Image: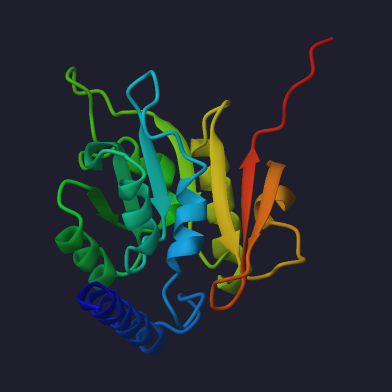
Length: 211
């Protein structure tokens, strides 16, 4: 019972953070409730927590940290996780909640530039660690089209040739904006036990056929 009460209080605190962001910046928050554990776990199940080569997983739109927590619970080390969050208050919340995780307060449209910045995790030689996969909780369909196009272009540019991009959406029937921008859909899964029900898309660069 104590554990359930603790989980309930944590969920209430996360929802309160989302409400404050919704009041401050309408349109920047995709839902009035934090993502459920089932949705976050589904997102995390598509990442490789222990790749062969040193690299990082990038989360776009960390929010209150539901997906971040699932990524850490999957076995992904804090040193291999970069979270990009546009809200200063939510970025500060994430830094306090997830020790050792690189949280960057900034615009996802600047992702390629962030790779060259001093905040980015680096190897022993000081070289920025490459991106292996991108996990996105951004409410793309709520973001104005010009800004959305910049985010899509940045994400596609930063995603490596063999990388995977995981995005969730509440638009269960609409094609993913990432597909419209040029990525290929690999798989799709619905998470009905979420408020509202969500869909998780896994995408990648199209495979170039050899001639």
